[in-house]
Length: 133
Image (cartoon, rainbow, N blue to C red; front, side):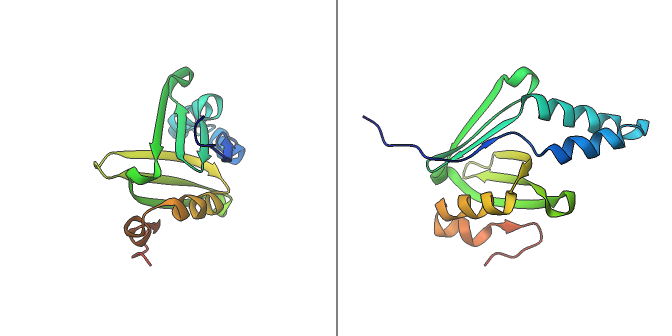
């Protein structure tokens, strides 16, 4: 019998990201952003638990990434949609990065993730432009 895994958040990108990018798609210049938002809305899913961060995405949800909290060196957030949703970049100790785009309730989810990090990772994490705590 394994350790119980409690889900804090499970779902896809914020619907506002899709709506804004569809509206921007009417200008031909922003069409690539619109296509990216549609693909994210269809196939990206995020799962934040007490043990790990899991993302599924890419074309037809073929890419899956699982990260345990002890592997995380830094988490940076960027608000989008007037602060309604946001992006997160999770940097791992090996230097690789995991992008979580258009996540709803990103401040609450960031606080939850931050509470699971080591004290060193907590000190360097935060919003873009912050110098740590």
